[in-house]
Length: 196
Image (cartoon, rainbow, N blue to C red; front, side, top):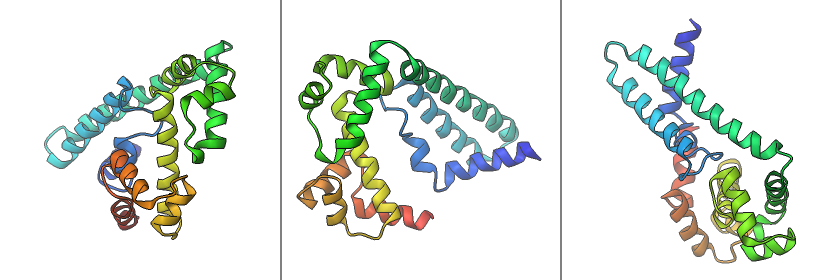
């Protein structure tokens, strides 16, 4: 019974509201091998479920295990960096705190380096080691995830979402959102509200 429950959860995630989150997990970057592996596994699981052929349940169960291993390996890698007593782990923790406080200002890498008493090279190394993203992409990702949160969980209009995420021009926000997510904020909101 538990096995069928897990399989139905995987199938519903592949076809349901979790689809966008799982295809682009926020804790894995597009350049990250584990992120690529996980996206491949979910695409494969989606195909297996759609086919419904003999052995599909066994294949989905194996794919689920592989997905858990990929996530576990990635989390282990993050834990080594995050919990490391080394300078890189400490630098990323400080960078993460700084970005969390200032992401709405879209801080430049040089400004973050100065604030952290470091260099652009070192903070990029720390960011890449922890997230697979260079600092500017990490900041952009944080801004876009905040935009997603506001679009999904509030009824405020697009111009206000733009302002709350540091964009003075809503059309610039829309272009940046489309470049990051592949669709406009309105399209993204409409699609995700329909899925809920």
